[in-house]
Each structure stands twice: as structure tokens, then as C-alpha cells.
Image (cartoon, rainbow, N blue to C red; front, side, top):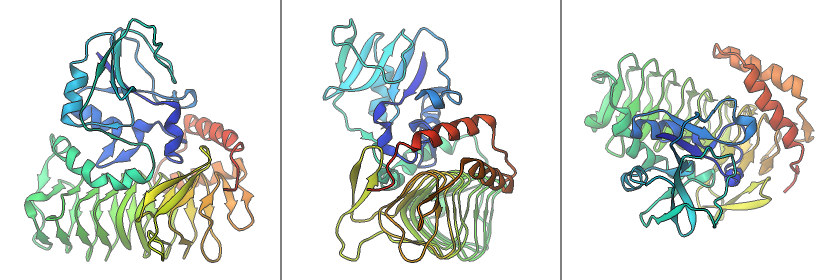
Length: 394
């Protein structure tokens, strides 16, 4: 049986993080949703998404498929229910499709014909369905705890160095090859998980839950509150609270960042700070330009910054700011709450010419010893053309 995590057209509600990736590639907890399912099911998992992303994620040709809505975060009861699903049966909750087992190869955006021969089975258990960006940060602590037993397997763990001061040492996991010296770590509030080839510099204070993936760097004197996840080859510093950094993002200097999600290949310049609560303590809303809708996020909400976006030094970002793909965040005072894809200058609203964007993206990739592939260029070009349909206003 081949497991396939499928996107639906509603994937746009997770903009900007679904512009260049399927939902299954969103990082939450320790790793991506796709990786979480693979660790749970002990097998490779495929992804069904929009055509322009399919070059990365190809559905295998088989005769027994288990399709699962990629927005659903796994739990023990739900995994048991889908594993026991009979052939040609749909699993539903309140008429919403959760999963389907079938011999058919289904296209993106498929619907179930009410007159089909499929059986239907009801699921009544609790589920978390990832629908909006603020939930990535909001649910990060829960996801770290759920994924931790799976990701601890098949790794070699070092005893933390005696130069560190640690509370809750039985919840501190430092993989062989990681360097953590002269730090203060409190794992009584949540686990601390640090992968190989990463570096936590001297004077850093960490309050779990905290995840640092392979090749990540935490700069000297950083103050990190849970639940924070720092992706592969990220560099972070300053004061950070409840933030998810996708792979290859940077916030390497002082400045506050809280209750936020930062896409891949972003860079926040020195002194950049993000407000995560209004002076009035009223609920925060943020804009989805594709849905043309304000999303309600609760009292605490920082920023959601799409892939390849950069903030100049000392940038001030207000509560509930959304920046799209390939934006330059700069200007005097607070930025607009929404910055459209490929904005070169937030003050003049000048667009980023695509050739210049590709040149600059390639330069940033070279800083981390990577290159921009032809496939990535095609996906970026597709989104660049698509983004012209977005309004620049709210």
C-alpha cells in the first residue's frame, strides 16, 4: 500500500508557505509533515499537489493507495483508523474527507462522486488540521512532543558537556557531532533536541521545547524560549520565542522575534524586531491576499515571512505582518501589514525584476554552499507569473 498525502485547493489558506511547497513539506515540530508520517509508518510517503510543484513530488504507479489529507497532523487513534481502512472506503468526519483507500490514481483537486461505489466510514476522534500559518507556531510545542520519540531512534546521543548548566538533563538530547558549550539549558519546560554538525555558542540561554536541526548555528548570548524550531543550516541569535524557522533561514543578530514563522532562504538583518502583541492587547488579524480575507490569530501573533524574503537592518515589523515570496522588507517606521510577492521596495512598492531576483537568490544559496536548480527556477518563475494576479493592497 502506497501512502499519499494530498493537497486540496484550500491549500491557499497556508500562504505564503504553500507558494513554493506542498503542505506536506511544511516544517512543524522537529521536521516536515511528510517526514513525520514516514517515521510513523516506517515507509516512504508520496505527495499529491498542484501541477507546478509535481516535479518534486511524484505519486508512484501502484494499485493500492491510501490518500490522507496533508493538513491532518497524525495521532495514535487516527493512524490506527487509517491503517484499518478497507479497500474502496472513504474516512470522513462531519462530511469532510480525511482519507481514502482506493486502487485509483487520483488527480489534484479530486472530489468523490456521491453516486460512486465507495463505502464511507465515520471517524469521531480528535484531530488537528493545519489550515492557517499561525497554527504552525501555535501547535509547535505539541508537535515537538509528539514527534520526539520517533526522531530519537537510530541516532547516537552524547552526554551534555559539564561546561553547561542544565535543568532536566534527561530531556536534553545532543547528537554526536554537535557542539554545545558554556550554555544554560532548562528542559523542565520541554525537551531540547540538537542534531549533529550544529553549534550552540557560549552564553546561550535555552528554555525548551527547542529543536536545532543539522548544520544550524545559535550565536553567542542568544535567548531562546520554547517552542522554537531552528531548521537545517539556519543561523539565529538575539531574543526568540515560539518561532519556526524553515531550513536555510537566518536571524543571526540581536532583535526580538516571537510567535512567527520564517520561510526558507530568509534573512532578517541586525536589529530587526517583530511585535507579537498589540498595544491594545486586542486580537491580531493578518491578511491572506489570495483568499482576500483577514485571518484571526488570537492575542499573540508575530510575522509570517515567505521564502527568499529579506529584512534590512533595524527593520520594525508590526503584529500580524505577512510578507510574500522574494520581498525586500525595508523602510522607515513600521512596515505595511502585507507585503506582496516580489516587492523590491516596500516604501515605493517597486517590484523585484525576476532576473535580478534569481541572481540574488543564487548569491544567497552560494553563501550556504548550495545552488539554485533548474527545477527551483521553474517553480519560482511559475509563482512569479501567478503572483501578478494578487492585489498589492488589502
